[in-house]
Image (tube, rainbow, N blue to C red; front, side, top):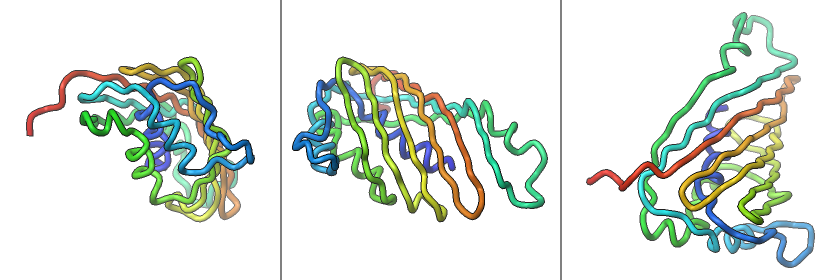
Length: 179
């Protein structure tokens, strides 16, 4: 689960500034090349970035027999904070970084719009560390040195259905540490 949230958060970390809907050819399919084109138009400040993902709500139906009592409530409020150094080169070419984060999954991008300081994205993924499918949506605001988004993830496998809502915030916190 944490892998899914962090993978989606990688998309958010690369957000900067654009005015494009990724489906440039209008065929209804958003290709990796179309997303890369939008991502490579963003303005991103190089340096050290801090990304915080907080699980806001969790609903799971069909938990297996013997699942620990309070497991779902224990997930709510969990925060994961990561720091990443964005180099000058990565800041100029964020599309390449986006695809490095997506290589381990089979995702189809349904919507990817970064217009007027807002991001609105939807994707459907399989092979996210477990059998089944996951539909994800992100909405929020971004700029060259920070972003704030809400992510919703719905999916299921093996008789289980889950719905997770998370908040994702990121900001540039300074220069990259030496070394």
